[in-house]
Image (cartoon, rainbow, N blue to C red; front, side):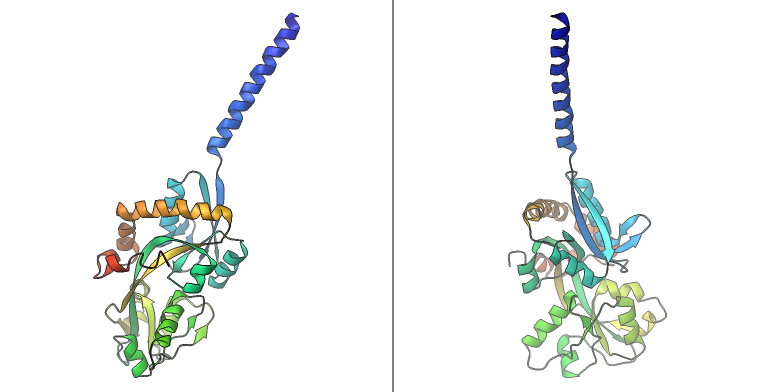
Length: 280
């Protein structure tokens, strides 16, 4: 009887112990989020020995720190592969500078805006001046081709849809901002459309010293895009709460000052333009 009672007690202890371990495991369980990012733009996102750096690199690390229930794993690939992988479900989140696009907002979930870009026209100091897209169209300036997967393509495409005099828009595969601006510097093209940070990154280089930049011609909010499935629907809600907190407490503004060469949130019209397309 004593031996029988001893085994009974040990069995009960074992059950309790197993329950405690299971409970602890549940508390510390994390969901892996596969993040895809294009490489090679130090201001926005770049792969380093310390993982992703730049505006989005620091942002995703902050989000990963603030949301212990998730583990954000970043993979660097081409711009085209980011979206093909996002559509197939290989990746959960696209960590790139995605502005509003009607088709993309229908295809993917999108978060609240994670940043605000200041759009400029970059042209050769000794070439034809451009202060607006109207200038580019009316002067028939040669515009650097843009990848159809790039948010800038949609901006230019929308301009052409609403204007009789159109810019000469041509598509191209993946191309770095440095390579594109070098083509303006050497005279192959007259002008390029980029966020201000892209110009500032090359401004002091040999090619960059041949270039100048227009005043701000537009502002665009940037959003994170997510593959559509049940788990990412929940993740989108969690991210929206986190992003709102980071906007309200000034963290996003801190990142713009650190990486984008200016406080884009302080620009005229910024309050109106930030997060403007969130409910579309």
